[in-house]
Image (cartoon, rainbow, N blue to C red; front, side, top):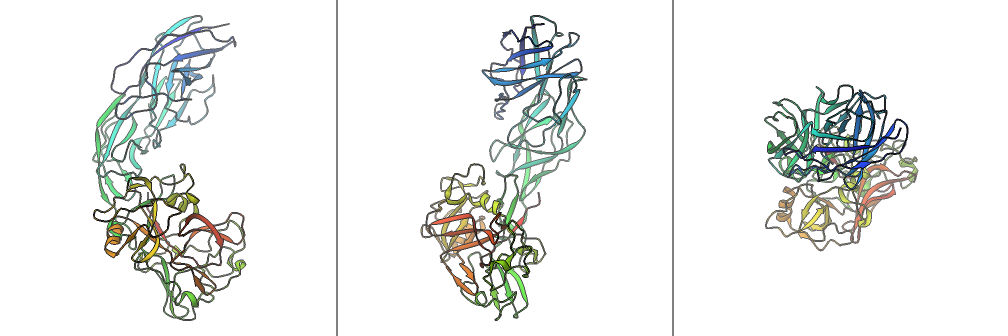
Length: 545
């Protein structure tokens, strides 16, 4: 039987504002037996992309409205263009309304099946990219064969709530104690929050204002809040009612979390660096790693006193043996030893035979250098670790200044350059690379860096003395000096090139591992070279999320 349906929907998708009626449009469907093609016109601008400043919600391409009838899911309508949803419903019953569910682009817990599915759940926990509005309404009269005009109101079953950190931060904010799961119920039509509680990752309108769609719930008097690198608290989250638009803002008190001993900038001034798209953060250590030999066979691990310090072409870098030194001293250039190597870990060896350092592609380190207790870094095993190659890329950007897309961090604005990640420089007469933390404010009275993110620039454009660097370091900057490299017992390129190991071996090149490599005319966050080479190591401490 051919069935024609005209749908009129008055959506209430503007938080805290009046409902508005939509246009009526008559559609002649294809004849598919019990399959009925319907088109839903949703003009007038009430859509799914939420503008937190106004509460206006805008639909976007491929948004879906799920349709229920007679206690089951019967089909869906998809937004295509021109304010129209279109789709097919199956087997509508004349003894029930048409029930419309909008879940803000969320993925159902299981793919609904027309005529079978009675309910599914959605999870609103991750709102980092989009605010997931949940709305429901049903037609004002039962479905009837023939040409019928339906009126419906889509009412929000959630609230839009603003959160205000005491310190503007680009970091991800998560608030716990919230209801994060809702049931879309076709058997008992409606959207019902569950009793389970979890953490909601807030949507960032900007560094100073965060937002969340929250399910209907009572006041949460003891919520948890997590912001990487901060001790943060919320007094309470107000009760949430349907269609609530809370713009006053829930205040988040913040204090900088102390960094571990040995962090760049000190425990009070260390700043965070994001190292992945899933918001993992680290502190950098205050200097390159050193193995200090008090005898030819006994060493203590420590960080260099200053970020610009290195040993270079001196004892004991030039006197390494098979996991020992022939003359007591300090080693700060290490080979990359794979898991399947017969060598002792940490690469204090003079052999230039790559096979001795592991002969399997894509193998792990035999032991991360951070496995060692660091005497001036908390003296605890496994507190520190080596960055992966992907993390180096995330921190600095791709090789040769290629378009990073979304594969590197969104960092601070330095000297009017957005997403400033690094700058080549001379610090305390040592050349190298300055890395800017995620939330950086350049200290007043210190010359602004130039050639930001300059892969091909040399080291002469920026120069800072001890006093100037102290201010930049206190503001969170990290400096990687050009400490050279070692081949056997020969050290070269000191003061002109820097090589810093990652924890990753090459995927197919048997004797290679990845490093970050720079010189005066380029920078390579994912360079690979022979494992036997002695390179610098700069460890990081991961922030507990």
